[in-house]
Amino acid sequence: MPVEAIPKTQVLRRLAAENPWWQEPFALAKTYGRWSPRAYLEIFFPLVHSRAVRRAVVLMGARRVGKTVLLHHTIQRLIGEGFPPRRICYVSIDHPLYNGRSLEDILELFEEATGSPLSTTECFLFLDEIQYLKDWEIHLKSLVDSYAAVKCIASGSAGAALRRKSNESGAGRFTDFFLPPLTFYEYLAVSGRSGLVEVHGDSPLPSFVTHDIGELNRSLLHYLNFGGFPEVVLSPDIQKDPGRFVKSDILDKVLLRDLPNLYGIQDIQELNSLFTTLAFNTAQEVSLESLSQNSGVAKATIRRYIEYLEAAFLLRVVHRIDRSARHFKRAYTFKIYLTNPSIRGALFSPISEDDPAAGSLVETAILSQWFHWPNFLFYARWPKGEIDIVHLGSDQKVEWATEVKWSDRLRPEELREIIDFCHHNNLREIRITTRTTENKRIERSVAIDYIPAALYCFEIGYRLIHFSRVLDDAPSSRSR
Image (cartoon, rainbow, N blue to C red; front, side, top):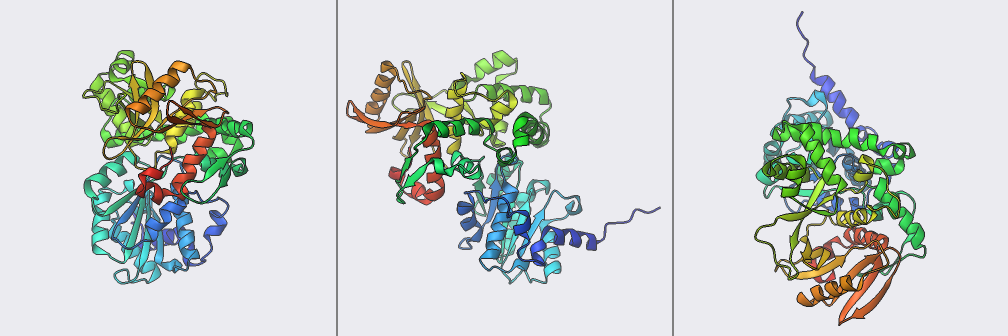
């Protein structure tokens, strides 16, 4: 008996089901309205809305950080600002009904379903999970070149594939946008705790005040353990067993499916073991030599695995400079950071405020706040001292530095080396995070700004959302 082909009418029905606003303009409010938009919508929406340059926007990020929700909140805002709903199309490329169809086929379906002449009528095409389309980057570039009226927005969870192919094929045609895990600023808003921090002033340099550092620190601890994924923050049930959520819904899909499919990795257990080791040692200095000795895996293989894990937005590698901010000709050591500190707690166990790992996770959290913004972050280490975060400008000179502590005590020799670093690099000020202490002092002509780590985490996230353009255009005003 012959197999019946799936008729086009079925595909059109599916397309209509994915775009309920064609029939009811405010349909999204019923499904996505119960979730508050992420703060990054304020940065993402102008890229989507702008037609000054003919480019597609490629939304990247780790699994389950809210990319699909962000797309629908973007659609909701477009409709709210008066854009015709029937000229907005959302397609989840991973649905089996779209298998084998090109982007041109999808555009034709969109045109047939709505009657919009796409060659002349401005419209928006949202393509979710685009990595499921073979040679997506070639198709998307062709679409951008051929349809001036169509603004394309693509997203996907296989970050490694998206970033690699976007760089290879989309030069001049794609604008990449990285959606990070929840920042601490967003976490407080989502969990209803924004009142713990007061923001005074609306200039690029506002002040941040908390009147309950104990409660703010408890919120930071909860963020370290559960705060990176919106679903975990909003679900007490998931918080009872975050390991199951993170492992089955995120790590297994990346480590067991995405990366092996993309790069032909044969020994998945080996990759999984390495990631688990690196997650346990987040914020610690490691070397290929020590990792190879401990695992029995060749250094070249470990280097490739780390590159894959970084491309998948699970890890971030930070390289070392010396006390004079010079790079090493041969970098034997580097630091590895999880892009989301709560992954460690999910893999092992949640930590307490005085846990030996708390300092490393606080440092990881602070680094993770910066992951969206293009920057040049390093750490400095020399025989007698270390600075955890050093920002180099385009001239390779130190613009600012921060030493991360989860303590209110600083040994005299540590402070001496920190001040020496500032003198070596003509820094007039430096920030040192603490657990609860907040004050300013002058030490050997260097201004030291002591700030609680939780307040600093909030400040970074706030500045990146509210003053992103100022931060890009005016390096001297960047948050430190």
